[in-house]
Length: 189
Image (cartoon, rainbow, N blue to C red; front, top):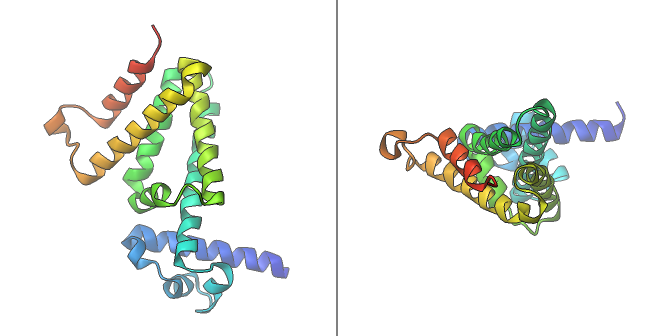
């Protein structure tokens, strides 16, 4: 294995270890020393790949944005023959599902400053996938306005569900029903 391949493999192992630690215990559980131990590399190895813990956590946010963008692109391809509203609902639910399955990674996605170039690029990729789905429902002139409404609503739904403030027995509605209501509300005519 070439030196560059070895360095790339080490970096992937470090990111994977950091993701595991984050999922298990939140940001406080992620230390560069513990990441190195979990990845099975020297204690100093993480410092050769990441400036500090914030740099590593930003990488996890970027990876989460990118993975979700991949999922939405795959969803678009898999459901190409489905009604545009169905594709849009599924994309919104995919975002909410990240919050459900990996709440700490979800928090990093929206906690990483938007001005961080690599994070902004990854977020923009997802936003573009999402806007394509919104455009299919409402048309191009209204896509940005409704896209922002849907994205911010999905974020609110995810946050309320995570905090326990969106209990179905209290509100008499499921997350899926809320998402369907949102998409129905923006549908023209």
